[in-house]
Amino acid sequence: MLVQIQTYTYLLFFLFVKYSIQSDIKGFDDTILFDINWPGSYANLDSDVNAETITVTSSMQEKYKCILPNIIEKEEKKEESYSGPSPLELIVPLFSQGTCSYRLESYWTYEVCHGKYIRQYHEEREGKKVKLQEYILGKWDEADLVNNLRKSKLNRDDLLPDKIIPTKKIDNVNLPYYEVLMDNGTACDLNFNKPRLTKVIYVCYIHGKHEVYHLKETSTCVYEIIILTPLLCTHPKYKPKETGELKINCLPLNGALNQPYNLLKLKKDSAKLRRNSELERIKVELIQFKPDDVDSLNSKTAPQFVSERVVDTTPVRLFLQGKHCLYGGTGWWKFEFCYGKSIEQFHIEKDGSKIAINLGKFNKQKHLDWIERHPHKRPKPVGERKQLTHFYSEGSLCDKTGEPRQTEVKLKCLEKTHNPATVSLYLLEPRYCQYILGVESPLICNILDKADENGLVDIPLDYGEETDIDTFTIKL
Image (cartoon, rainbow, N blue to C red):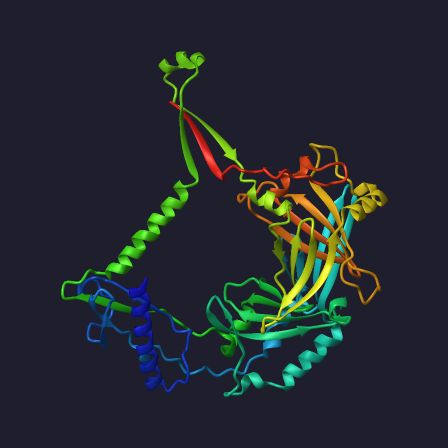
């Protein structure tokens, strides 16, 4: 690892200085990609052997002559002239055709109807009844579209030769984009009842189908959505720059190995670790036949394989004992759920300070009182259960209602998943300062039948001492 890092650092520093002198560039352009290649001999080279070279030495004193790519040939071509429609006019067909893009997540669905509105919603079906929860994250009406189109035709900054188009780094490549700001969404009580708003970023992608590439909440009730569309690609200023990967070919000197020893060792150790990680999850157990099985010794059938699953209940035990908390949230707010203790919504500032709101604390008696008032929240009979519901109360005081915050926690069994440790969390606020916290995981399936008629689980201290492995019993 050391030799690879040293070689890359030295070569890239040299190329940075060389490129800066030749092209008079201030700062390092990280859109130029380099790859170190180890061809072994000149016969395997696909680059100019007369190009500029540099000699590097590894930590093991191995010497290599590295042939540097000709960066001058990769200089940016002169920008083509353009007098076509403005960026907004180019994407207007999306608006007029009523095109909508969707993004499905574990709980929420996002609907982006271009030039009209952005909706976040969830449908929950109970028999024939459908409960819908939705928020408008931003919208335009016809007047907004006409007004913005008029401005885009009058103000053609995109035609100015010195106009710098903003870029967004996507997959480590800086791509120019056009931003549409959609506001006037549903009022956000966490942001002084200001309307939700979304910055819709349109990026040129020739193979795009106007799909939602990325969505995040950049601050409280302020969102950012990246749309990949081919419509912008006819405008030269919005085309991605050609970034072709440049190869640095390094050849061994003085009998050195084709690749540095430490690099070869790193690759070998990595492959070994991958193999071991797979083998460590398998246990082979040899057992003797019972007397009744002796007759089967003459059988021509193949050995019998019996696969068993020994579930590691340690995470469940630690979670139920309140020793392990679950964390969620991908936007400005994050939240922490400590089973049997409390729920906290928080944000960490850049200086390390923490803004925290308590959404509820667990009190057994208050839960029993709540379940008595809401008998339909009791768990179903054993064998039919899919989820448990708990009540957390006495959270931070709500400035909207003057009452303490409270949360209904839904622990739902998540079936048909490849990873038994998967945990999905979501937090809703259907009413001011009254929350619903959903916890979905295969781990919950293990505790459903252990809950009493009130949904409470009494977990023994010695619960879950097995190891998480796949056991294959092979009868020979």
